Image (tube, rainbow, N blue to C red; front, side, top):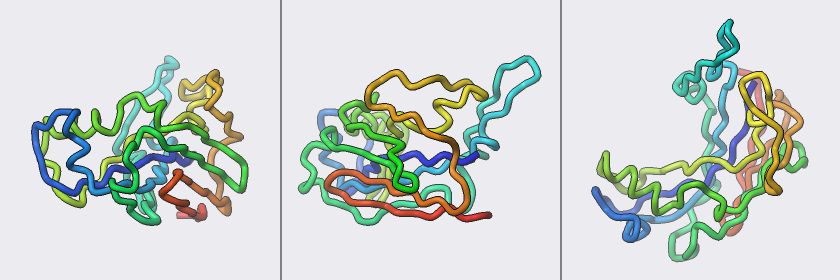
Amino acid sequence: MRPSRLSLAIVIGKPGRHISAERALEHVFGYTIVNDVTARDRQAMLRADGSSVYNLGPGKNFDTCAPIGPAIVTAEEISDPQNLELKTRVNGELRQNNPTAKMVWSCAQLIAFFLTFVTLRPGVAISTGTPGGTAWGTDPEPGGKKPMRKYVVAPTGYLRVGERVVCEIERIGKLENNVVAA
């Protein structure tokens, strides 16, 4: 069970710590794409009573779990990271279609949040999270539900060997990956 999750990645260009959200974007070098592939069968495990255990580590750490690229587009070229369209297609079928304006936390808020804990250094990439449309979000087994918002595309299932995933973010480009066996 491996869904692909498109994320905008923020690439830090200037170090900092304890910076407000109002000044956070001053620390951005640029933006790129992350295909945040997750092994849901390792991450979400059902208990006998029907509840679930959510283990982030095993589901997010394996070879090929987070392809990134194809390029970093500078912050000067993307003046407003909350005004980008994101799309994921699997074998040409639209699976995710959401604007960054719908993010729960803005890029500036995410940067400011991390800067309260650690000093961010140039080259660090922050994955912002994914819009709706992942297979897991609609899989009732681990607690998903039917998509109800207009930007959420109901997926047809988890990724399978041989499928082609194309993650696209407006003004950044397309990150294309083939699903292969371990």
